[in-house]
Image 1: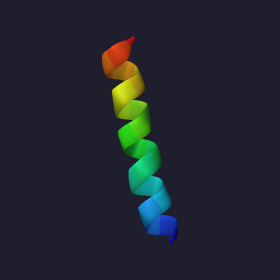
Image 2: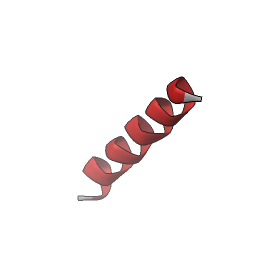
Image 3: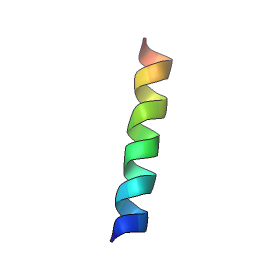
Length: 20
């Protein structure tokens, strides 16, 4: 579960950076 959450968070952060 932790690994999945980390992956999701990383994707979200990447998306945020791309949108910014």
